[in-house]
Length: 103
Image (cartoon, rainbow, N blue to C red; front, top):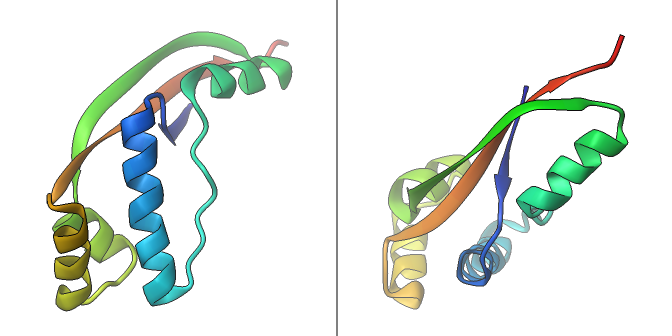
């Protein structure tokens, strides 16, 4: 099973890149881009896996909770990000892929 963040719409991608740009300024942490769902499924198949089932989950990430904890940001850093973005939550997605390796 593979679970991965995906960026399937331009607004989510743009928001995440803006947040990661700000975090880079604070922590010099670079995160690779998240693939789109179709590209990830294609890579799994190309690697020889059979896709048994997949499901995409949409939800909202909190700058205060998710990014603060994941990147060990200070309260003032998260407040700054929220001030720049003008919101505390943004839409995100993950895909869960159940794969089977052929025998």
